[in-house]
Length: 246
Image (cartoon, rainbow, N blue to C red):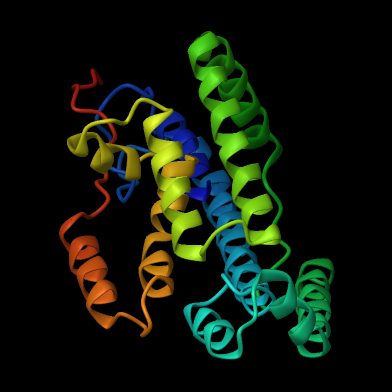
């Protein structure tokens, strides 16, 4: 999400459109009038990413699918999704409360570089871009969003009610989110993973979890193959092969 926001505004500040090559790592062509706003926006996104990382860590200790080691603990103890949640409540809930209060405090009192607000001009541009994308999405695009939301609901219900093994649920999310959105060829999976704000990338991040949960061990080979694949598929700086006029 942060990547998508930054991509939109950096292109605008550089005088580029959303349909051309652009290097997000370079500020050489950023307009002088927008450099200060861009720096402030970076600070806002850094804070957002840090809160997201903290929230992920806090949420990870609460559920059986939050961390790979939780899957191993649940398998050894015979706990499913809800039993695991209630067993760790005496530890996870105080940790979650303290973590959320810490995030609130550093933002409220602007401690350690936190508390950076999004510039009003950037907010306006992002809203305009969102409205324009909504108009261009059409019926097909809205149907894809509905499908992704339905798959997300299925994931929550299936995990909460333990309708199947965690690995099977994870694989079903991958299959449903890709196939129902038109990704039916293996060569389409790579580009799908490079798009921000999509459910397929989220579901693919679930795959190492799924691999480890369907075996009696932690499946180190699955983790090794995943990280080897990740190293070979790096996110590009550009999002379109077409050239852009100055």
